[in-house]
Amino acid sequence: MQFRLTVLPGDGIGPEVMEEAIRVLHTVGERFHHHFDLHNGLIGGIAIDREGAALSSETIEMCRRSNAVLLGAVGGPKWDDPQAPVHPEDGLLSLRKGLKLFANLRPVKVFPTLVNCTTLKPDVIRGVDLVVVRELTGGLYFGKPKKQWTTARGRKAVDSMLYSEQEIERIARVGFELARTRRKKLASVDKANVLQSSRLWRQVVTELASEYPDVHLDHVLVDACAMRLIQRPTDFDVIVTENTFGDILTDEASMLAGSMGMLPSASLAGVPRSGKRTFGLYEPIHGSAPKRAGQDMANPIATILSVAMMLRHSLALEQEASLIETAVSRVLEEGYRTYDIMEDGKQRVGTKEMGELITARL
Image (cartoon, rainbow, N blue to C red; front, side, top):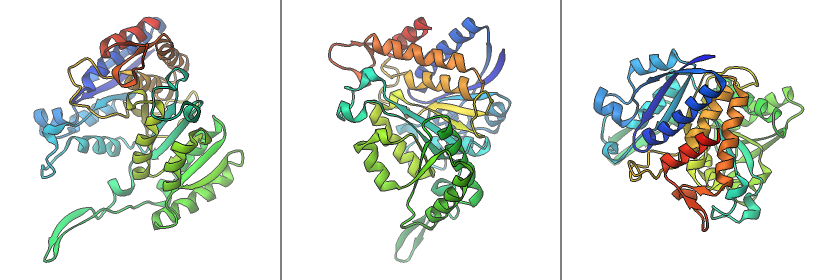
């Protein structure tokens, strides 16, 4: 089969981890006789420097003509000036909005061989296997009004957490559908005791639940969810929540797996269903880690697992996706570790060697 893909390596460690992910992708192609037609573009800081914008209209069009998009990471100290007219992260927000990527899937699965790699007790994280479904195109990040101004009494700023019934229903449906394929448990996270947007959220999710009688629904306040993720993470199967809460909770949940370098993500334009191709953007949840860039240190596993998610959700290649996940598991079981998940008695490797090891297992 033949597929057209857009590749956006981005900034910092992005190009390094992307190189290893592409190595894995080409190996899958050779083994299964697929051809991946790759088109490279710029996003983030490097796009600001070369094109004057964090994401050009030409790059967005290239993404639209593709079956899926692979992204590395964006940002760095060079572009951190809060007074700057454009920031690397603007490219991400434009990409999500321009491609109508409303559903972010972030699986958190603890590999058995890594239960001693975190600051949490092994008994707490053993068996963790959950997915956070985060709404991507609404809430504080996009709501209007959004501005900063100066008054006679000082500076003020406002961001608006705005959600419509339609936005809530479509992301909740992703959560319910995903829960049906797993353990049939859905936790809807909000702040309904304080926020009007969360009260609407809870109303809409409750109404939608009648269409999914086989899925057990729990409503959880976001602060309680943050506590339970550390206290009893195995309680969760699928979590669905709005944009800001999801951003924070998924970074917290990444610590269950030992490192952000272990966790992939998918941002989808539709409801994922088995055997169905859904357009999406795939990226590791970690940032650009500029202090690690160019040192052959970064963990490429999150980006490689993002390739597996792309094969599963956007290209409907389940066998190929599972093969990559098995290869990653085997390399970890054999004791190879990048710096972020290193343990006593294990063999430390760099970005490139980790990618080569996983490719060899394929």
